[in-house]
Image (cartoon, rainbow over all chains, first blue to last red; front, side):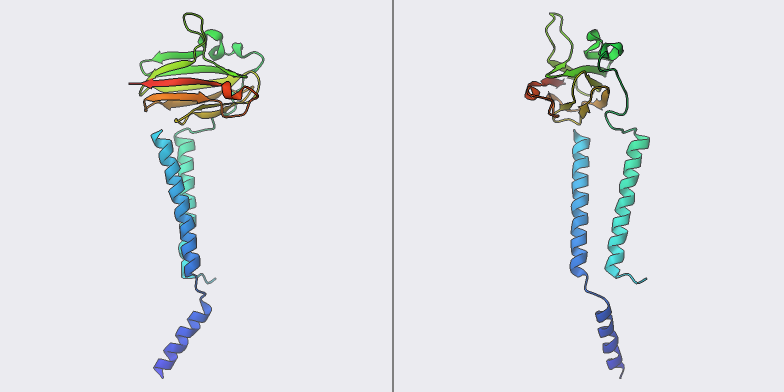
Length: 48
Length: 167
């Protein structure tokens, strides 16, 4: 009985929560690109 | 309101970066006094000699104190006027010892010019009616070319001079 209940809850959350793993990775890649370019340009400004 | 776990992470990351960048910007502007190179200091383009800095005898490099220099330049189509040497020839190269603090003040009588000391942070627009200035410490030795990087007419590519920073 308990087993069935658990399975039901799990499948419920899976249905409600969209899988955003790909979106998350893409957003973080954009973020990393922005930070890397900002730091790069700032470093160039400081050493010149 | 329900937010996905990942959404919370990237919203925090995004808003956090925005706050950090704004703090950096405010620090530069209000604490270190960073401002655009031409920030509203005006001059009559028809009569630039009225300003002491741009009198013919004050053009070019002037030593103010031990490691402080002022360089006054008038840009015209198609030349940078850096004054004349003892023989009356126009100066095209200026030499500055490494580690000096140099204030560049540039204006123009005619059209918009550029003033870029290639390889350094000195890079500004020169507009008629305004004095563009930039103060910097020249820490790297070498020969740097001053170029006009704002198209000013047919002789645009003929506008150049050099700055030599020596040990």
